[in-house]
Length: 241
Image 1 (tube, one colour):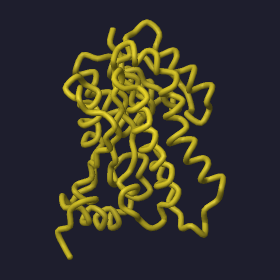
Image 2 (cartoon, helix red, strand yellow):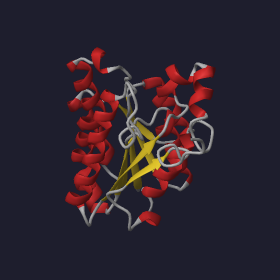
Image 3 (cartoon, helix red, strand yellow):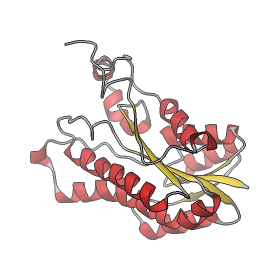
Image 4 (cartoon, one colour):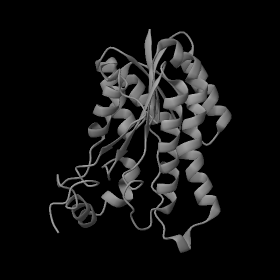
């Protein structure tokens, strides 16, 4: 049985990815901290899930180990993220450490626990960064630093696991998911941010899930160590000025 582990599979990009994986005939295995949401997605996709908070290293490690039992692990997607936007004067050490634990350390722990199974199946891993790493935005010190570390982790694992496991990351712009609800709930703000993109809309979960699904598939067999911006052109294209 071929299986793809999706950490953060209960909503947003992770949920959309689970749907796409299942349509390919691959079994998603969901890991997250929202029991009712996980159960709903798992029921829809007829798959298994495990409850774990990625900030709890032991619980996350145990969940990934359970996912690896009795299946060929052909993919691992770490779809967890945070949007902690503060100017530097409001930054605290605890907020910075928490962002690194959630975005970077959790990804590394999941990768460590799945490594043997991924190598045996010659699988692939996908992580998520943000375009704010490549293009500086105000009030993004916390998330940019944490996601910059994700990009470093992506390249390091791509090198360490070559040629057995491919590792890539996706860097979204603002996407209309529950994670970004505080920003997208304000219609005026959402419209203004959408207008900053060459393709003037906010991202949708499926925009990123489509690429993640491709990167986890055999069709991407010669792609590793890359960071892909899925951002409506925002990081590279200006249509004004």
